[in-house]
Length: 138
Image 1 (tube, rainbow, N blue to C red):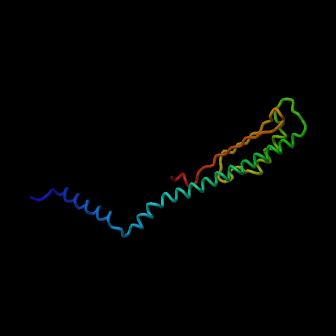
Image 2: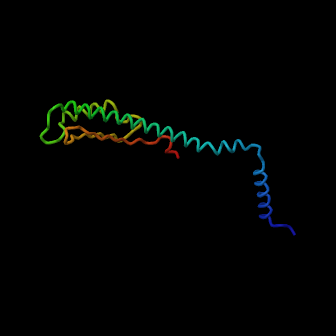
């Protein structure tokens, strides 16, 4: 009596897979194909992290330039209300904008704010969103 067709096909598939597992010729193509995605993810992550670090360091430099310019414009005057005068704020923001333009390095959502501290120091906070370019695929 003959075996059912499904069992014959399963047996043939099992022998085919075992022959492929033992066969060492042509494995290079399979290994390269399997390693392309992880390599692209590593390179993409490195590129995106590099852009993020570059944006962060340039943003810090622009923030420093802005608050130093605002403090210099403020001079020895002491505002009575404890707020940063508008002329010093404008000078600080102008220096910030010269050093970090909106959209630089593909960033979005640029925000820079300064405030006058109680000891007459000027502090600033800057933030941007750095979108990923390559890693958004993964």
